[in-house]
Image (cartoon, rainbow, N blue to C red; front, side, top):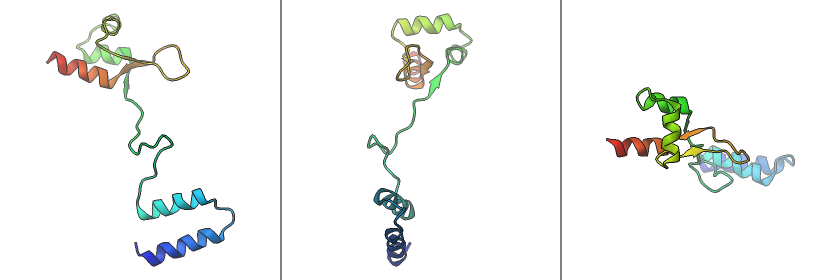
Length: 104
């Protein structure tokens, strides 16, 4: 994209009183093809992948959910508990993959 085009867009955005400076910066970043940083400062923030207990049991070779719970109690798998919750919703893919790599 040419510099003159970006200057024209920037001037037009400055002339519009409904566009805040933060929004203007965001628009210009998008036009340049830059990725906008997330609020915590990480550009590559992705939510953790989570397996349910049933999925983890099936991936372990049709084991039971009780076996998965036993692996969690031993510290071989890590349960994921979202912020504000007291109960876990599943097993993190990171701990599951680490466990599988250690078995092989």
